[in-house]
Image (cartoon, rainbow, N blue to C red; front, top):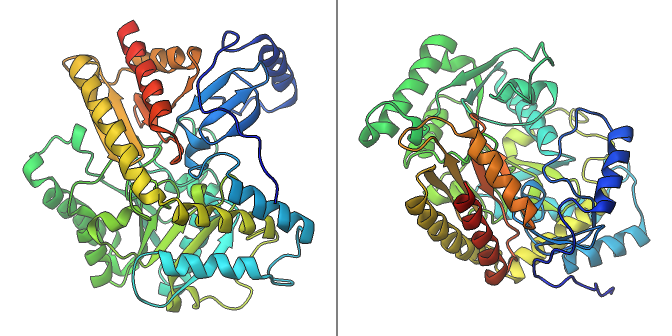
Length: 446
């Protein structure tokens, strides 16, 4: 089919960041778009290929954010582009619940096969991670006939009314947008770096705290679902201690609670597994996916036990655009890329380079309090040296320096002091190492 003229995979600056054309375009942005929209880097993008963003001034910027974990297979990945063009030429929309089409079915078949567990599974396709989470909650409540949903400190699940209630951090996600949906209960998350108890017993202590709160303050018999990110994303890439997720899954099973893994950011090869829960052999009742599923097009899914997914009455689920045929075509191209280029192994390899480099930086710069994450999903938490106090100023300075040198990195964290790395899984070793050398310079400049 079509052949892309790919960008050279190298960092190149021809103007300052932002350049004059981006500066002018961003004035138009200010005039035309809502002031409630944020912006990570002050440039306007013209093209993108794999791990390089080309702005309208001709600067080539290394992308270590993947559009917040979306373009894991690379920007404008060839298989995705080919599938999309073919689908656009065939038809653009019918609504799956009006007149179905094959690629929706094929995406669901693939997800049913790929998600953990040998049990019979079924899937539902929607437009975004938040919509998928909402549908997972709907289905779990319908299946169990229970109202309560248990979520965790530092969690992020979306920006709709229900998912804002599920999300922990107030600013900027929830401030002024309430009231929120009821019957949402938040329990402690074992955040190792800030844990005040014994690190040797953190898993046992955390499980005791969580289950005690559920049993005594909610009543396990009232809980429809426990919803958790296997590695928390916006909260700061917080990795639960070993054994926590399996214990939580067992508690859910023992009490008839639907265990939902929010794999929106962690799923589809990102952590060096197809799904992050596979690290400890956890089999959720439901898995929520989005972000990396369709190579940049809006698509998300809920995949769960067949008896759970089939518990909803006919027409109780759906939506006009959910599982749009173009997005489904992109997903099939993205999943082909994942398989044929073995991006699970590539994510592990990226993790080795990224993790070792970040740990070396931590030895050099005491402002780095902790390095954490897994595979191509890693982060550094910045502190006031000698303490665990958040260092937001250092985070901002590091991000600004990297941007000025043509490296896009993202931030996160409940305390707004985490730099996170989500590079495309197709990034070359050379490009990744170049970006990390800029990061080293950024810390040296502090």
